[in-house]
Amino acid sequence: MIMENYYAALNYTDTLENDNDHIMVKIQLHSGKELVTINPMIDSGATEDFIDREVCNKQWIKMIKAKNPREIYLAEGKPSAMGPVTHMTKVPMDISSNSELTTFQVANLQNHEVILGMPWLREHNPIIDWNDKRIRFNSERCTTWCLKSSAVAYAVPEEKALEENLITRFSKVQAKKGPMASDQSVRVKKLSNAARVPKNGSARAVGQALYTNEGTDVPARGQTIVGTGIAIGLPHNTYGRIAPRSSLAVKHRLRTNAGIIDSDYRGEVKVVLANLGDQPYQVEKGDRIAQLFIEKFANRELQEVTQLDDTKREE
Image 1 (cartoon, rainbow, N blue to C red):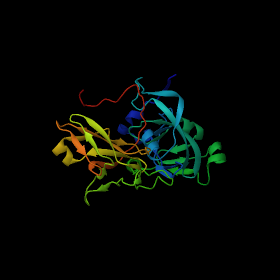
Image 2 (image 1 turned 90 degrees about the vertical axis):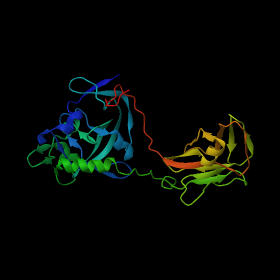
Image 3 (image 1 turned 45 degrees about the vertical axis):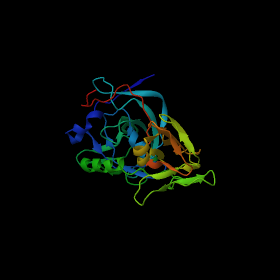
């Protein structure tokens, strides 16, 4: 079931010239890890309260998969590139002294990080002074449940608000808490006494040399799997990449295949050596046969959409 969600202005908020069309205010979201300060746009043109998917990922805001996807349509009836909405989130939110648990629809917002739309406006019914840029919470709900002290929140100038949001959006991702999460060391376990721990060939070498734990032949125009006799534990949000050694590639036409090590893999690290030459190659125990690179990555959830935004790039 696809539910329609009309929002006339969301894709065009970066071109609005009238300041009275919307207002921005500073809020704090309790992500479960730390307070996230951000400036949402309050807009009565939004039929839902939205939060950007990238902000949720970076700030460790837990997303809940929706039972029914919700397509987002523009005023002319065309599907928006921001949808469909497949997840939602419930986050404690503070606006000045007004505290509440807010439900957001997670979307791929293009020009804003958070949008407070009609659901939030109907629930709180704030009085907005567009001239003085003030928001007053004096509804029965707010005075009974939400407010701690002052009932007034002041708007943030849009230029400043957008600049602060960019800092939040592109801030360095913090690792999850936990005994292993903050540890950025690579742990190496020797599976045999003869195995050798990877090491840099020089002080400025990027890759760690991998050593064979057995002798074998790599046939001409063929490949062989060679054990290293070690297992490794990688830091959070990293993976290992096995690459060929330059000298073996140039002199003997040896390459490596299938060289990705996931951070949760705990088996023996093995190297797939491919011989592109016309002569077999003899591997001796203890030889340096490949390089290990530890690289960071940003894991992103793949989202199925009905339409992608257009670009100027040709097919």
